[in-house]
Amino acid sequence: MKIAFVIHRYGADIVGGSETHCRRIAEQLAARHSVEVLTTTASDYVTWKEGYKEGVETINGVTVRRFRVRSRRNLVRFKEISDLCFHGQAHTAEDEKAWVRANGPDSPDLARYVRENKAGYDAFVIYSYRYATAWDTLPEVADKAILVPTAEEDPAVHLTIFRDFFALPAGILFLTPEEQDLVGRAALGSLPPSAVIGFAVDVPAELDPEGFKKRRGLDRPYVLYVGRIDRNKGCELLFRYFQEYLKRKTHDVDLVLGGSAALSIPDHPRIKYLGFLTDREKFEAIFASELLVMPSPYESLCIVVLEAWKAGRVTLVNGQCKVLRGQSRRSRGGLYFDSFAEFCEAMDFLLDHPAVGAALGRAGRAWIQANFEWVHLTAKIEDMIARTIAARAK
Image 1 (tube, rainbow, N blue to C red):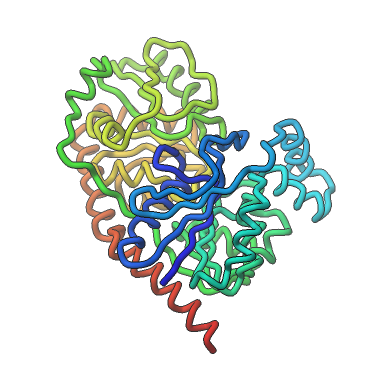
Image 2 (image 1 turned 30 degrees about the vertical axis):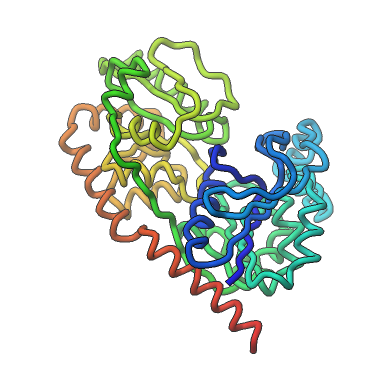
């Protein structure tokens, strides 16, 4: 089969849940199928600043076609239209479409390529409903399209224009049962055939967690956050909670951060920012940590939590996020908090009872191994593609 993946940005050096999910699945399917990725030249998710050259390249065995971003995101306009659509004001469907346009990325060349070359592909796997790349391409190839919404419990999913949009593709692949339920409610229950696929995690060989700690000057026990350091990821909340926790508690523990920063990091002796981490460094940081903390209120999956469980590490997550709460309950791999008091109690409990934390981490690893190996994921995706091809042949 010839399969095209459509996504807003793509690259081995891009840190992002949707982007990582797309890249790893494209690489897996490329072992048995002809796979191409259709994407933009953008590298920055805030402004859509171009970081790659237009044209064709090969990344880890996958052909990647990049198309020019016509204009960067106007942050002032984006805030204005977001305020109009999300903060209770009366607005129209045209306002909502304007929000998608302002969100971007704006790449008419990508949309044109899909429209003119759709006959050459058996299926289009299109990522992230909220971006203009999905909005512009999915209607052109609806009968060949499999949408991976990566939807989170935030206001965008409830825009009225997406009710019909979610009904357009031939199939939908969800990352969690909670996401499936969310999109079903947003679409008022009218959805195409769908499946929940999750994600598989690969742990690099020959890790050196102690060497990592020494190289990075980490001489105290630490809790770890890895991902975009962003207000929408709950990092502002994490900084506030952790600093207050240190004032009230006696544990000799640091907060270590890895990832790209779109938010100012407090100048605090117990908060250490390491910057971008390679896959190897990320897993070394996870193995060397006391626990992984994920404060995000909005997630469709959260790969790093799955990675922590694959490494056998316990997690502490924001219970306001239905996905993280549901995953924690199903895996029994960690705890969740709904308030500052619960954050403190959970931190104390896990730091005071390392044997319990280790047992929770082992439970998380067993759950990952039983449910999220590549053979499971690729089989579900291939089945969905085969069903869409069969439906067109009728």
